Length: 252
Image (cartoon, rainbow, N blue to C red):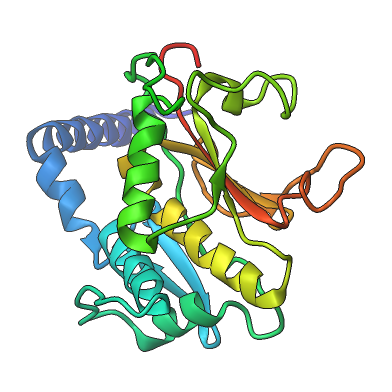
């Protein structure tokens, strides 16, 4: 290799190093502003929308506030109550959340998962739920009104669930939609979608319903097939109830 060629390569290398250094300085100085500049409505160019609704016309991305307003509006309208302002929300999104998929009841909304690792372990309240689980119960009641609830009791529960069930820690609630009919399943999905949209605020860990589950521990979100234990009846498959549980805190 000639001295001239070697000098050119060395110069190119030095220019590349300088460019990387300048980029690093820019990220340090402008990081928050630069990243916010990469955001569009409901979407970050770095990671896509926080939530997605599958409509008849295709997927629609939402930010978390939009997902919360949309799911709350649908839930309140379903019980004939006054709904929040839905200005700016795609009508197709509200329609999909109300009716579900065209062919059958099922999931149409999902949000990305996230876990707060700083949460502390909580003791049971008089209801038999931890404060975080009690907050979920109260928040559901404000939107959905009176519900058929189970999976907890004053003093806690010690049987009736799987070996390591979060019900035994007072961290889980079952919301029943019986009997198993298409209409009850659609109502169950309205609740399941609302829980997922509010999962970050309420420290929700899992939502299980209708052979599907969503987990805050799966960062990309999405609904996934739920592998029910034997005898895999409608209760164990969560066909007749929505299961929701909250993060335990600490090592939980």
